[in-house]
Each structure stands twice: as C-alpha cells, then as structure tokens.
Length: 447
Ligand code: SF4
Image (cartoon, rainbow, N blue to C red; front, side, top):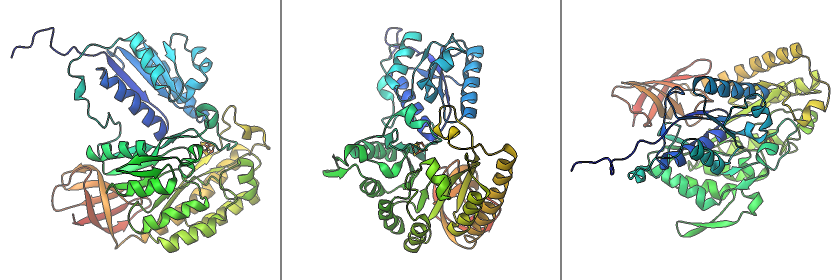
C-alpha cells in the first residue's frame, strides 16, 4: 500500500535532554521523556540541530548547582532554546538572573508544567503511530535494571539538607501503583528493581499505610508489605535509602529467605551522638551497632552500604575518633565519604564553627584509609565462594557484572570470563577467583 503524505507519520520535534543529579532525578527525567515520546517527540543525541533542550538540574550541593548552571550555559550556546526543570527550578531566580533567555523554569516533579512549556516552544506533530510506545515507558537505565520510585519528598529535617524545602513533605505512592509499575518493568525484561525514595523506611507514613488492591488482595502502603510483594515478582529487589528504625528488622528474614536481595543502603552520615544530634538524623538514637549485629546473625550474607560526611560544623577530633572506632565495629561492606559542603540555605552552616579545610581533608584521608582496609577484608572473604552475578557489560565471553551485594554505578564489579558467549542482563553462577581493592574476578561455573 502506498503511503501518502496525509497518512505518513510526521516526524516529531527533536528534544535534547540533559539529566543531572541523583537516581530520583533520573526517574523524573524518565517520566518526562516517556510523556514526550508518547506525544511523538524524538530524542536528539546532541543539542546542535535539536528543536529544544531540556535540562533537569540538581541543586543538592553547591558543586551540583554549578554543574547545572554550566549545563544550562552550554545548552544555550549550542542550541539557544532551553527549558530548565528539577531541583534548581525550586528557586527560579538563581537561573533567570544569570540566563534571562531561558524559555521556562519549572520545579521538581512538575511534569505537567515541563510538558506544557515544551508544547509552547516546539508544538508536537500529529503521528498516527503514537501507540507504539512500549507500555513500560522509556527508560534511561539499561534494559535489565530499573529504578522504582516509591515516594516523593521527605518528613525528616536533617540540618545539612534542603531537599524537604525543594521537594516538600513525604508523599507516598499507593502500593498497587508501585507494584503495577514493577510488573510492567519485569514484563519488559527488567531483572533488577532498585527501590528508591528519600527515606524508604518511612514509606506510607503519610497515608497511614492505606491499602490498595493488587492481584486480588489488599496491600498496605508499608515498607515490609511492599518489600514482600515485590519479592513475589521473581527478580532482584534492592532497597536504597533505608534508615535503621526498629521496623527495618522485619525485612531481614525476607533477605535471608532470598525473597529480596540481602543488601541495605543506609546513609548513616556519622556515628558520634553529638554530631548526629546536630545533623538531626532520623533513627540516630537507635542502637545501631546492636541492630547491625542482629541483622547479620539472621542474614550472614547481608551487604551494608553507607555514606558519611566528615568535617560537619563543630566536629571535634573526639567525634571523628568515635566515628573511626564505630567503623571498625560496624564492618560495613561499601562506604562513600563526603567532605562537608555548606549548601546555601542549610541550617547546619550556622550550627557551630566550620572545620578548617586542611583538618577536613586530613580526616577524609584517614577515614578512607580505615574503611578501605575494612572493605578489602570483607571483599576477600568472597574469594572461593560461588556468587550469582548479573552482567552489565559484555564482550563475547568476558563480562563486567555485579553480585547481589553490588548496586549499579555505586558499588564494585565482578570481571567474569566464561566458556560460552554471555548476554547483557543474564544472571550466572560465578566462582570468585580473586579480589583486588574494590572489585572481584571470577569464572562462570553455571547458568
Ligand atoms: S532524610 Fe534527611 S538528608 Fe535525606 S532527604 Fe530527608 S532531610 Fe534530606
């Protein structure tokens, strides 16, 4: 059949998209792109030649803000038609003062406003084949893993953080909504779901754990119930941004039984009671070391990853020494450490005297040295064991993958060799032959 010009699908305007910031911002980007693709817009590989550029900004740290401003400047220079969204959009003056030519500035999660601004700047083309959009939406992560955002905002008020100011209080999605999205992702080939939010352990508090209907039963919007239901989907389920509240104990048996991954990402940030108090961290008063010990008794293969801040205002040498001792006791598997950065508008900046830059630097190095030794010891214990490994990158019979104890992008990897060609997203049993500072090396022994 000849296709005449009136029935042929028109090419939609081309959008160049820059996504900066954390996984939560990445999920926002995916939602915006999904919506635009559904309307027939196309994605451009570069700013030059695109009809429009969207920059999803991050405003968490001053260095992130600078990166965002740089990205906006580049987009204006290379294209000229720019819409800005994301965390920095919560304070639009910071952007419009510097770049008055920006077409529109919208805040985080304001999908409708972004799309409306795009419609105005580059109206969508009519396309009779729009329904070809895959039902799982458009993902920016590889096909085999996906972030699953269960809530927006945060009820905590950590003094170094301006996220609640930018994103508001906790708003949890109904459990059935989250589970249906997870099902769609799994049906599309996703093998690993990464559960994210600002405070995953607080899920559902705002809606009083209201149940919703999924697979013919009522599922409460509650941390444990959601974890259990996700565990039924038969894929890897990894929990990020969890705080050590007593109710978190309930998911450890699910990990021990293999229903969800034996992995917890807990941003402890510090250990000294004084510093934690000044940080106003959630669950800081819980007996964390006892809790970790008990978790490991129930689930010995549990991997705990965390992040810390050194040089928080008023941190004394004694506080820091307490943190180093705590690290030795806690024996965490994977740890990131940041030097304190005074984010504009954060309460913490004026709580106590700033730690001098050279002291902060020295503490950072001492922290990293101590933790590196701990992480290496823990990694070495895996040599000789058999681990399930998921492959992220493949070149013939060689692959780079991750064990159940490694999240994508932030943790270590396993370099794998095999007798037969491997596929991205495939999971195999790998015998671990050796460990170096951060990564493992092994051989496939079964599929
Ligand atoms: S838990 Fe604290 S650091 Fe995390 S988003 Fe909420 S206020 Fe910010």
